Image 1 (cartoon, rainbow, N blue to C red):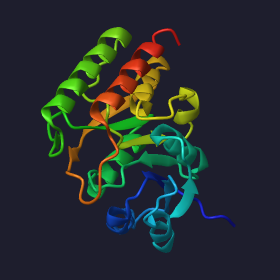
Image 2: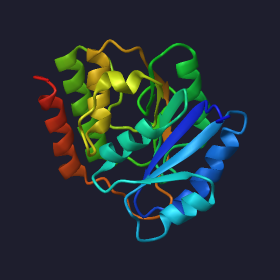
Image 3: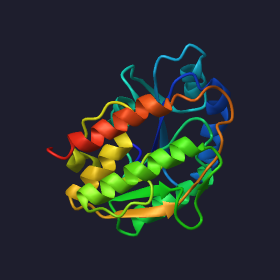
Length: 226
């Protein structure tokens, strides 16, 4: 009889061999009391990220399009009742997984980590990114009648079935923004919980401030007429 999975953690990766070897064991330790799975969606890394993830017990999928596409591939493939997205660079604290799980268990459809509510914070946000995030939050809250404190942060949990209601289209770094907008429009129950973003441990970050900021801006205005 197939194992019933309670929590699925989806981690998009691209050349994260210096970090994935610590992320997966840490996630497993935190989720040791749950029936769980870890899905790594890899962009055909050249440094053996996928091989290391597989050796550590993760299920490995591949996607070469972008973060949004990789995330959706993993979430669609996930078997858990609760789905969680997190980054591979050790910026997301595995110990916060239980808070994200509790948010869904309490009755919410989506539970979003926020760096800008009491208890949250960031050790890795230059002023230009902080300013940009505030502008994007203001735009989304004003244009869509929302009340978010954070927008461009990918540490989140979802009730199984909530993702289908969102009908997501974004394939790149605008995915979190699209989730926030469509969650509000679809009337989903959303909870923000405090999260502390750490500095990337090893390797090079994939976010390009101005290029990806433009993508996020395009995502906001594209959804005005959607």
